[in-house]
Length: 105
Image (cartoon, rainbow, N blue to C red; front, side):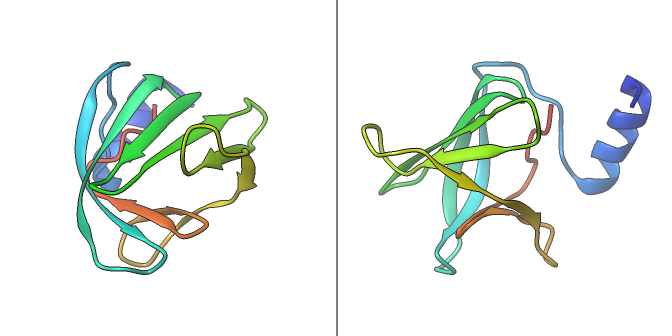
């Protein structure tokens, strides 16, 4: 997909491109709980990012072939998760949901 088309799609979905190392304010819900403020930090765009809430740091890695792995705390085991869009435009990974200007690339 060319860059212009990706930017147009991002604008329609309410997501923004982001530079690596930038923190993006979002709202997050863990295990269908209450929505709270959180941040997403992108270490490597499309490859490695994490979400930080008041209580947790949840890390994600993309394998470059469509698979995403998640671990809830450093030192825990990585597990494969499915990314899905919810009806309220939040992006979820097996019980970890985020909404707002989510950076996709």
